[in-house]
Image (cartoon, rainbow, N blue to C red):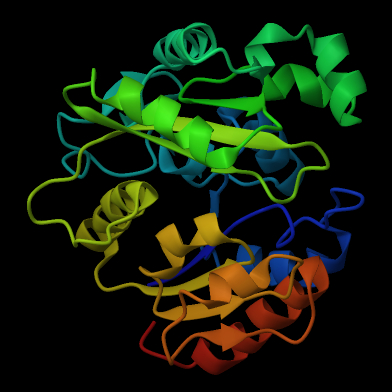
Length: 294
């Protein structure tokens, strides 16, 4: 079975116009072959649902940097999803992240106890967020429908910020906090998530999002057998799914170098950035694998 795992911003979608137009040929080729296209993104479920409607996708997706996996109802046959998947129509959900309300509480505690000037998406109205970020109002509303992550603005010392959240993490029993800067944003924005601690069997350098990717791929394997996965990314968070892809391709981007530092010898660097490069990579991969053991 073949499968494509991809990020959105700077990969399938261009950064300037948020458009996938240059990738239409490859998208149509995947659809003709019924090859699942799985989206992995820092975006919210509402934002990914909007993109999936535009692309006419009906496959599972992973949102908020691996905080939760959403599988449409009736996608897998009975017995593939175990009791850890929660039925939330029209999906089954495997959640790994701290709920948004808890993250908001942690952000407020850091703000008060450390006297840091932190302004989260939850502190804005949708109109204020749209004006501050330059995104359309409808997209701002979708970005505010957060479930397992918070984005906040902070322009002070990064080490001070990390130390403040480390103090809050000490109060958690089953989760680890992760805070990191967003490089594609025009504002000094940071991304906050809380993760279930990995099992003892996890690798020492295990990334939180890898748990979500592994869980979804395991479902596909139990349903349809061995997987030949193509992973396409362009930024550091994409390592979470690239590590689990048979063929790993990095698209050129302003921050691709920091992702490339994670690369192993078999990783590939595409010639073109964004959806143009994405289109070329997918078409070449299809040509190479169309006569495999399908």
